[in-house]
Image (cartoon, rainbow, N blue to C red):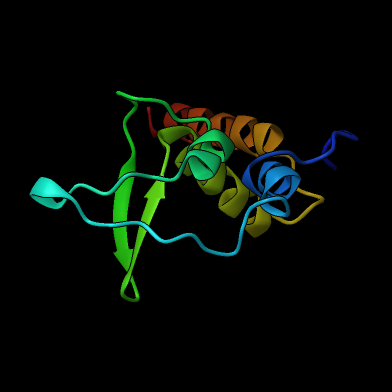
Length: 108
């Protein structure tokens, strides 16, 4: 069953809204205890403030920071891209549950 006519949302669409306005690069210094201050323009774009938690990864020599919300949206986008557009996950799950219930009844 095809998905409803809802526009896909998530990380890719949100990122495009603000990414174009950001500088390609800004320099930052490593301070005491290895602390690095995230430039204000990037904090604003990421919607992070003092005390917020970030996920940190080292990828190909780059340090990447991501909010948990961005991580969730990225995961949702990856799942959405891996599912054919004509597949309705809710219907597929219901069908699987029906099949399992019927199998249990046969086994009894």
